Image (tube, rainbow, N blue to C red; front, side, top):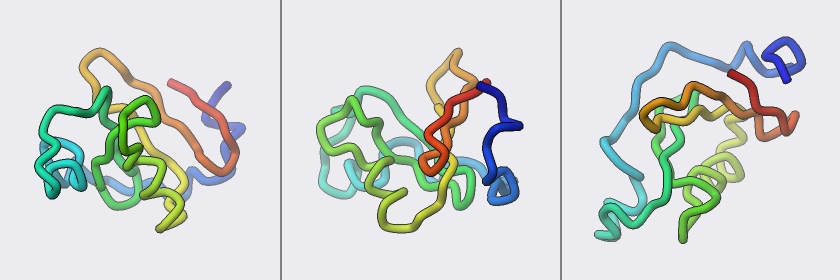
Length: 89
């Protein structure tokens, strides 16, 4: 897949990670219990991946409808659109 097939590229903003880990896990003291981290490309929210116990990145999308997240794991450079259900680098 390529970014050209995503119809939500206009929602991407120049943001950085708002926290150094999953925002919600840190609030409930679940430090380092996430599998991987994702950052919202609209607001910078950092949430744990769908493979993690709490799946906060997915929950962020469902509560905000911010469509695009990217991996912030070392060595990973992909983005994912929740609405179009596509992943690209």
